[in-house]
Image (cartoon, rainbow over all chains, first blue to last red):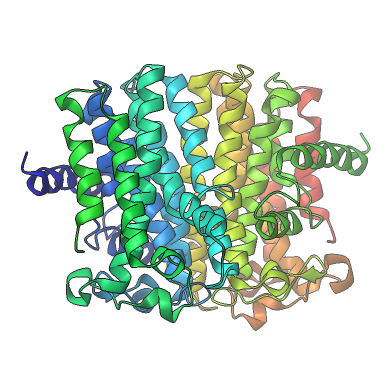
Length: 295
Length: 295
């Protein structure tokens, strides 16, 4: 498999779907839809929707049917980035080489664009079932899971602990932050794809554990890149974790041990996929890519 | 009917339910759950959940079954107040006589508390169907409607136009702001209660039009109170609309014409209820109260 090519193809499918679902720039009130689209179409890798689609593939589902729900995950991810970048939070001026939403549209509009994206995610999560493409009960279970994964005991909870912690956090707190701030939505993405595709219990369980290790591997790799990466390739100022006095895996364990931990997560994720055939190849390549990428 | 007593009794039911659904103060991470509860239990009148329960009564539904969904509306209302009060938005230091969420917990935590309340609303909206108390299909329709009512073409859209407008707005813009910023959620509340209680089409239509007039009546009355009201009774500094250079009905039409408009909305709302018996008495009293209240 040419993984990068396949990743880009899946991300392009997601991009086309997002383009279709989002209100156009001219929709009244125009400025909020512009701001939503500005951040949503800023060149994200679409990893969460792609994860959902790829888990659906393992469970024998249909890309077309779960696409609206998969795209909801990208809306939630984008909202969380917009709010995280705000002056009251991480105060970042650039993301992916462009001004952040509040630098471009002002703080009020950035807060509201985030709110609107989060809200619209739940509209998208109902659409498959309302058109009859997806089962109602499973859709409701997924909406509940996504809300928990994104809420005060998930993504928001992780961001809260991140904000109130300094760089002297202990390993348990660092792991809490990552399991919640990024891990919860990765896990939710994989489960969404599997549940909406009618995955059996043991398939769902394996994909869930895969996603948990993938999420942690991703975050450790991200921390390592922040120390060792190439600013040009990543598109944002590096050593931002050091500047913001954020705890990171390399800071806590050293670079070599952090790398070893990322590889261990990758291997544990791969173990969970042993029961599956070629339909899980993309997920296998994905966790390898996450650990080995240079941007 | 002793309306005030009945209103308080229904609000007390909502309070008890919210108390049960919300994570306790000690739930990790404690600060976010404290901030969520601080704003949620700040003495709100619970009008939106009460509207949902009262529409359900007209449609012959069960208070107990729709309570989680009704409470979701109060979470969305509270999130919108927290974000509206932020320095980047209306920059209000007090609400209901207490420091606003960001004055008490800081801006970052206020943004996140709003995000978490909005997210948790959608968890609550699934709970009736997931426990088997409510039908799945109607629950999905309601989740979609609530997301649209709260999103960029609803509540958020109204706030956007409010922020980018000054006090020279034309009548159409003023009406857009109110129909969206507050009207959409009133309408959504009544429809939620009716739909989840299996209301027939003509009942739903009548209640919908009732809610649209109620929402506008409420907003006009609010604008009038801001000019004529007693600061002590209302619990926030008055003439804030003038200070913030916001357009209001009294400013645009004069006080007498604004009052006439509020009464007209009340009468149109009451007309919609003529088809119903005593089961609609509470909704009748409510729209009278909204127009005549002094706080």
